Length: 65
Image 1 (tube, helix red, strand yellow):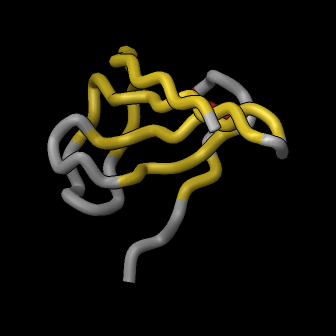
Image 2 (cartoon, helix red, strand yellow):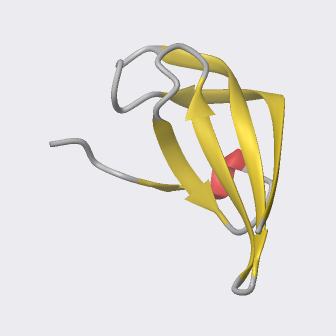
């Protein structure tokens, strides 16, 4: 598996720290199931969501407990 990390400008709200996120770390992961993009909060560094496209508007987000 290959991983590439870069910083991108986004407009999101982190479900963990509840802050408005203006930039996020995006980890491009290439594996046998295809390319996935993991978006990480710039404030708390927790996972915001995963997408099969490099577009934060099509993000599959997770709810916190």
